[in-house]
Image 1: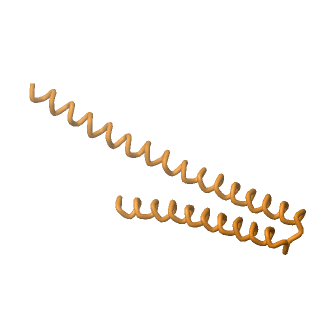
Image 2 (image 1 turned 90 degrees about the horizontal axis):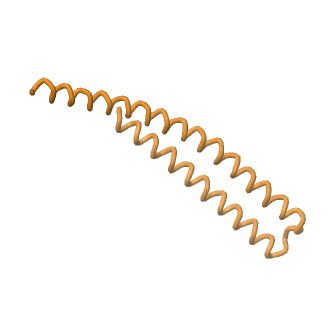
Image 3 (image 1 turned 90 degrees about the vertical axis):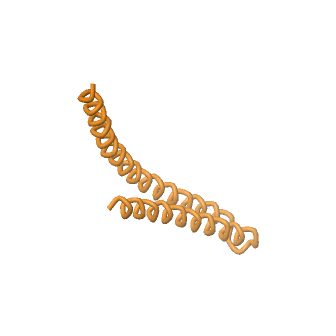
Length: 96
C-alpha cells in the first residue's frame, strides 16, 4: 500500500512537471509566432498574459491540493513515529 501511495504521488508530481513543460512550449511557440510577425503585438501580449495566468492558476490550485496531501501524510507518519518511539521508550523502561 505504501509503495502504491508513493507511486501515485510521483505520478502526480510528474504530471504537474509535464504540464508546466507544455506551458513553456506554448509560451515559446507563441513567442516564435510573435517574432515572425504573424500575430499582431496587442493580441500577442494578451495571449501571453492569459497563458501565464492560466498556468499560475493551475499551479496554485494543484500545489494547494498537493500541500494538503503532504500535510496529511506528515501528520499520519508523525503519529506512527511517535507511537514507535513511545513503544521503544516503554521497552527500555521495562528492562531497567
